[in-house]
Amino acid sequence: MDTIYSGFNQEKFLILCANIILVSSFVFSQNSFVFADNIKIVNGIVSPPLINTIQIERTLDKIVTEEKLEAEFNAYIRKKYANCSVYDVDKGIKHIKLVRYYQGRPVRLNVIEADRNINPKINIEPVLASATLSHKASITAMARKSHSLVAVNGAFFLPQTGCPLGTMMVDKKLYTGPVFNRVAMGISNDGFKMDRVSLNATLKRGWDNIKIDNINQPRMSVGFTLCYTSDWGSMSPVTPKNGLQVTVSDGKVISISKQRTPIPLNGYVLVGPASNLATLKINDKVNLNVKTLPEWEDINHIISGGPYLVKDGQVYVDIQDEKLLAIGGRNPRTAVGYTKDNRLIIVTADGREGSSIGMTLKELAYLMQKLGCVNAMNLDGGGSTVMYVKGAIANRPPVKGGIALSNALVVSVKD
Image (cartoon, one colour):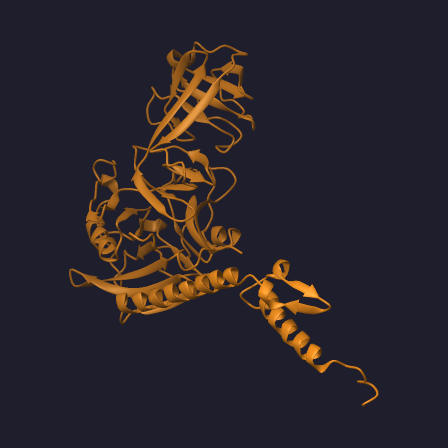
């Protein structure tokens, strides 16, 4: 043994081992401290003073802050939902089940609270049932396709086809325009906005402007000029009486017809009264400008709802202004809102059964306010109300598993 270790420097060996352990703990730890670029090795020995201690301190501070926020969030949820069933969905996402009584009768509620301050990997967005608008799918299918932990029914839609009725924007792409300027929620990387949304769209040809009333929506007035993209489907809808269809591809008018027209992948079809479109000629160069008002430049996604439930912290149910009188009364409900510190809150209320009678819009509004929402809106409800959580339907929709839907609002955790 003495011969084997002849001339061995025990001090250097111990220093080397200590440095290897130190560096390995930084490079391979679960918190991913990787400082290899800042480490200097001389004669096989790591020089500890060259390790970026400032970066270590900042990373540690971040971990401590996140852990503190998570502990505060857990304590807040326990206090807020005392005596309720609370489930962990993922870091920063809680699922709460509770029963409340209205007029002495029960309403079964499911609540999701999600906080991206605790978990920046939480992703919130609307998803469509299909690549084109006129399709429907189950909430489970949409949740699985989008790898989501939570999903609820989203915007109103046309039952016959599945086309969303109202503003729908996903990843900054506007699929459909607003209907009756109804309220919508905008979703950014770190927050939310809510307002009634209108459309500002024009077709420019030289100095001329033609007003475009909506995009990829059913016709609500014979006087409207509507724009249909390939998201609508392969063919434009029927021409209105005394109307025209103008096909634009790569910024140039390529056909004018009174019949339904194939929609080009790199263009659109304008359908409206001849009095609005007759000045356009084949080979005209045109430019379509589309904006939502408010413009919300920092927003990635928009999902429409209606009516408002809470506005600037106050109960505000503008059912008449948004032309939604038909959805009054006591029904299954779905609502979405957010707190002053941008925590997402989603609620479903079961109804149309003895064990859960549903809610009125006013009752739902007061509930969202009590849950801390500074802004909240109603989503499609009734037979559409359904909540999916971690692989299963969490509520009891009128139709087992939920009816086929046009779109959903989903929550996932991205790597």
